[in-house]
Length: 185
Image (cartoon, rainbow, N blue to C red; front, side, top):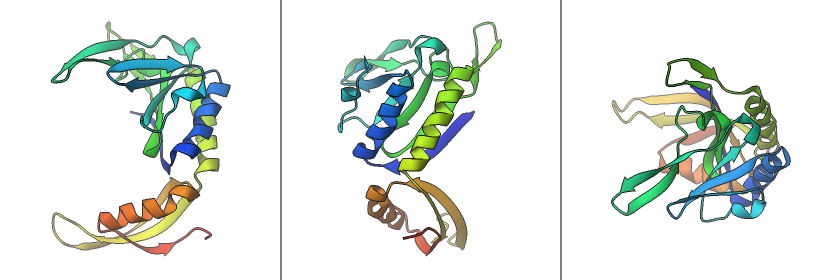
């Protein structure tokens, strides 16, 4: 479990979120080319890598492991319910999310909650995402794949203006039709 906000934004819009994380004292990590890279500079955020991790040093250290794959050994951040996961905020561009875990159990099975400093930065970045990617409320109509019945649903997503057309086409490719846009055009 954790906290997350889903959003759709392009690279240029994500730079605003990433710079805000840097301004709040985060170090940006990414897994790229089989290695874990880190920087305190926005130049680490590139168009050819969509997934990033904002690390707050006072929340703990970042550890990574070597994973054996068919392409050889690659470095991966050890982020799933670990002390590292407790010190990072997952982020990215495209269809992505800001995500923090709620905590983890240590080796002695003692619950270690997410540090307050991470929660504070997370909430601050959520506010930035909501400014960059306004809330889109809409009604959709579709057909359930498993039984062919039709349905209608009220939905909400955060989508940047520069990603809106691409996002709508993505919904169409899933055979979902927006029947009513509830946001100002």
